[in-house]
Amino acid sequence: MGKLHKNKHKPKREGKTITVGKIESVPPGRGATVKLKDGSEIALFNINGEFRAIENFCPHKGYPLADSRVYGSIVECDLHGWRFDVRNGECFTEKSCWIESYDVTVEGGWIKVVV
Image 1 (cartoon, rainbow, N blue to C red):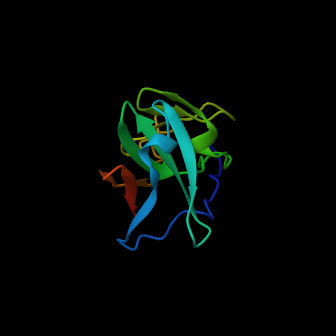
Image 2: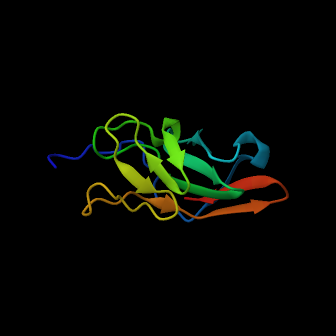
């Protein structure tokens, strides 16, 4: 496997709920990069109307996952094909590798993420 890429833009866990956008801003089957005020980023996905959030950068080489292809609840890094479950951050390519996942809720058409 080699050395993993350290994600310098991973949000710090603070237990804060942050409103990140309207539900119509992320079409079904797509991802979006959410840049937070502190410069950190998450990848937000719409999986058939259910919103999920994970770290935005692949630990293999640091490619943004929000820009990658989504197959059901799996995002595949466009750079080298590493695959992650957007529901919980599980990596299917390298079993010892996980990425952070974040709780997401929708209230009144607004997407909220707990970081």
